[in-house]
Image: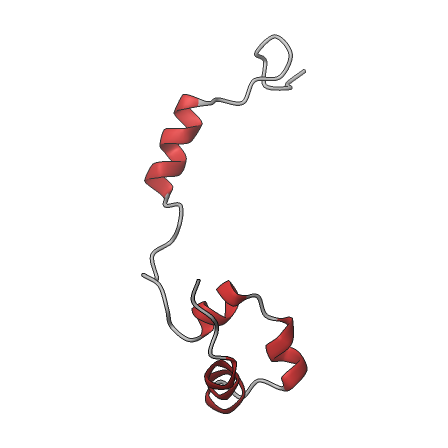
Length: 69
């Protein structure tokens, strides 16, 4: 298992991003990665995929009237 290079991460967060120490330590590793520009930058769920999921799993309440009166 690889260890974190805390001094380098702290420099990147506090010097590079201008975070205060308490702001740095409140971040999750994933949030810090995003702030540092890591990752694809691609949205995890686009509209097309949402439409596919809505079609596959439509909301139905009761007898299928979608809650209308």
